[in-house]
Every structure is written in C-alpha cells, then in structure tokens.
Image 1: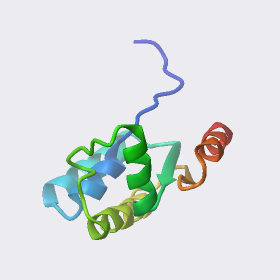
Image 2 (image 1 turned 180 degrees about the horizontal axis):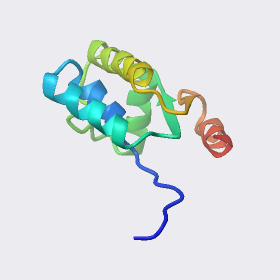
Image 3 (image 1 turned 120 degrees about the vertical axis):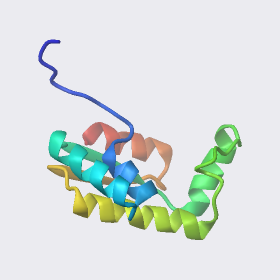
Length: 112
C-alpha cells in the first residue's frame, strides 16, 4: 500500500470512549488505538436534543437504536464525548454548532 495523505472516518476511538466509557476493556482499547493512530483533526458537530429530533423527523423520521434515547441519555453522551476529547486529544478539535441552519453548518465544515 502506498503513502496515504488523508483518512476520513465518521467515528473512531472517541466514539468508543463516549459509548463504552468506564469499561476496563473499552478503556484499554481506546488507549491502545490512541497510541497507534494519533489524530490530526476532529470535527465535532454539537447539537441540542430538540433540534436533533426535529432534523431526524424532517429527514426520514426513523430513529436507530442509538437515537432512541431520552434527553438525559443524549446529554450524558454529549458530556462523554467532551470527556473523551480531553482524555484523548487530537492535534486540532473543531466544534461546530450544528443547531445553526444547515447552510451555516455546511459553511463551517468547508472552513474546517
């Protein structure tokens, strides 16, 4: 395999940390992945619970098993992501307010 300049993924070890936080196995796995794959840039789309539900309903209305949650679980998971970003930092973390109009979110993504 040749040299790779970029690898873009929609989830990596921060997601494992946020969804499996405080599990001995998950902690060991995330620590190992963090050492093996340092990340240059993380783009975090931060959105509030009501806006996320409205957007999902407007798209197709079907919630997957991760989305079928209450406000408390949603906010707890968002907090877990912020903790994961501190525990396993990337060279750069860009937080985008995803509650803004979609056109503004897209503009922010292009600037990141």
